[in-house]
Length: 283
Length: 354
Image 1: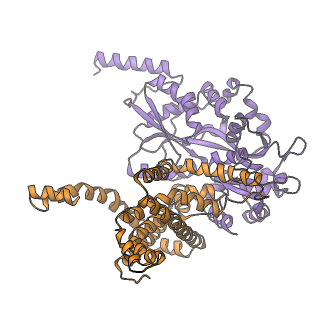
Image 2 (image 1 turned 120 degrees about the horizontal axis):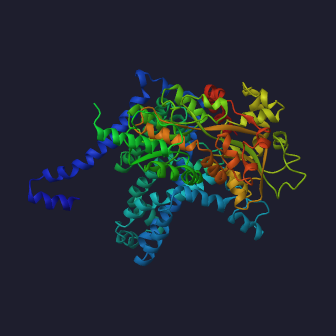
Image 3 (image 1 turned 180 degrees about the vertical axis):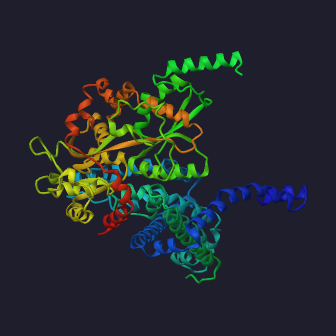
């Protein structure tokens, strides 16, 4: 972008063309993002009353489902981090051929419909699914494991969908790390564990925070995967909002719940930005 | 002052319209023909059946292309009508949503001059804004390899009896039907279900809860659970089990105590293609076309003449077949319109509670 604006800037004025380039995206955001969000806010404070927020924050059902949603989103983000960080490291340090191969493996499911992948998990994880049958035949277990229609199933399905959102930001940061810094640290007497903890990890933290933020926020809105893999017992707030909007036409309460979700998402994003800028200490 | 050429054109149009529609055409000139209309429905296998039975005929009759979309969505209907940006000429809705939509003034009245329901059951002819397209039933289905001949569940008392009929079960993740099933299992006569004793129904549901392995969300899921042997006994919409049986799954349907209900098509208030939506409902009322539809998905149309055109092999699989109809109970949609939201909240609390 800066190269482009630089080239254009030399031709005609300093900011004019850059601004011209920005008009379309800005208009796009105003019309399709800012305006709908404002409308949503207006819906939630219908007649200037905060009653819908009061209901959303005091009704046991909504509080319980909101908390369950945050809990699942956090657990999914942490599992994605534990799986995604080593994957990103392998991709960042592999030869171009193996990196390409790894990306293909990561991206293929990414381009498949979430619904199809969710049904695929049902075939794999079920009581008589491929996984359990294999375990039973190998004599590893004598009862099928309960991997589906509970929180475990929901976590597996969501982590599968969201893992690329963790890997890509971490990978892009890792690619920029100067590996000679690690050699220098080890040359100065650091063990490889120390070099990782004090050099590599801090340098890749921006990618970790970006990935955590993305995965957490996308998780909050998850909907069909938990409904299908959770056996109906795992309810996320998206299901409630959908029901209020589509079936009961209580758009004000739905908007209030959505605004609360948005506020939490923004809060999490702001928190990670502050951590990143060093306003909060991190050791 | 009518110019001869205009009179000729409208005369021709009238003749053509009269010839192409069995229903008497109104004397007024028809609104301009759009290039296409959008018919919104539930999607899935049903979309293909709607096309084969009704849309192909409609396109032939009027030269108007029919585009289908899904899913049925009361929220979207309300958004369309309130903003005046109405894409649909016709949309499917479940009865509860249709009644609510009518109460909120979101629907065009059905034009009796175009839509001929004279061969429908009397109680359906008088519906002013709701066109009853079909009837479907929530029924018991089970694996025939889990319950051999002579040991098959035949009622909701059996469904609740986990000693005599062991194995994981599935039911829809919704209070609708399930409260009624619970009351029937508890001994309430099917004609005494309404008004529903909600407390009693939930007390009975408590007894079965831990044996319900899956509370299903989508129709596709409901049948797949039995196919995958994830559960051995469940409830689902009759057409879903029928499709699985057609694919060779060892599943049987028990019609006894099934909950039968209407499914509705409606025309959004102010739809620019409302007239052509009415014509679609007219096509859907054709007994022969209804039979084509029923033969594919086992959801019957309600034109009484449709039965004589239905494949005799398919007829016993229809919820409206006399042998089946006598075993089922009709859902009281008005009770659900009035109490649905509160009961749904209570259901959500109940289902996620440990």
